[in-house]
Amino acid sequence: MWSRRRLIAAVAGPALLAGCGFRPMYGPQPDSVVAGLQTVSVGLIPERNGQLMRRQLEQRLGRSGAPARYDLRVGLGYGVELQGFEEDGAPSRVRITATANWFLYETGASPRLVAQGTDRAFDAYNVPENQFFASDASRYAAEQRLVDQLASDIVQRLAIRFEAGPPRAG
Image (cartoon, rainbow, N blue to C red; front, side, top):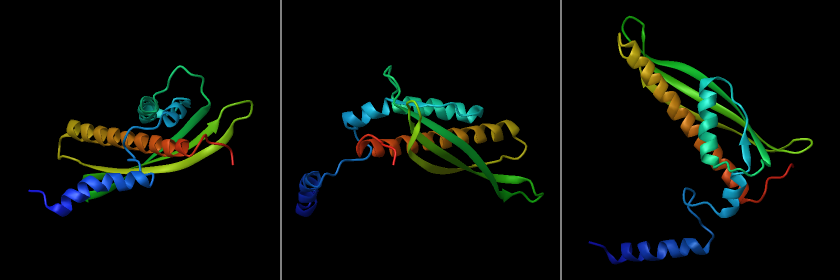
């Protein structure tokens, strides 16, 4: 049953937030942000996980046939930390730290840096005893989740940057 206080909060809360310019971060983006993101081309990123990252970024940016105004360059790196060990010293749990350093350049005769950032994501997986295929599958799934998270974080930061207006060299 709804109490009077909860009912007022449910009805008045969104109205009060709308007056202060609040907009949900994960909701629909304004047309200017979508149009800006569609003009970003993603440069090649080395290795297999780099290819997967590039594909995720391109899908999230919604690259259209419009000419690219911006070039996104991403460097992807991984760190591995063994966290758990069996009695015989074999690893039983692995933590992966993925770091993406990204740079947004305005294309033109002389490309200019207009935004940059570093995003980091963490994940871990268990290493089953004497099950090498399961271990590889777990590692691959963790790397996929990391690439997905980093691509999402980068596009979110770019969307915030485009919402403030077209990026300009500073």
